[in-house]
Image (cartoon, rainbow, N blue to C red):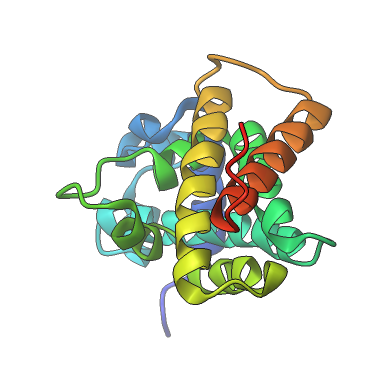
Length: 192
């Protein structure tokens, strides 16, 4: 008869998520997680090989939470603006998750267009939402995506690190203004 576990994998991941939400990734150790569960670390390691596997599964759960925000953004009237707004909202609502996914050094630095597909599983859908706007070419869409992501990531980072706060109206206005300016510039209206 297989052993009966005190906790499920899902309960352990949920505890890990809550710890990161409250205190960041530094808080996740086998001892701290076991203490959170009111147990020894033995039940954790009876379900997971090591803490790396716990963190891997936790990051997958965080990506699923982030993906829910992106689905909402993509279903808005202006999908790319919706995605940007949801990206910022994710940073505001889940700052430690945002930092883990988007503010962690993950190897050798590269250009933005190479980095985006690596850090965001939704890259293709987001790029398509940009390309659909005003029938942009793939080249134009990638250029617009690059600039808007840099701008959006800046706002999100300022919010996630408690440097600045913005109202939903301010975010919407900023996103619209930058989006229109970039599109006008791409279409040849450089009047400033």
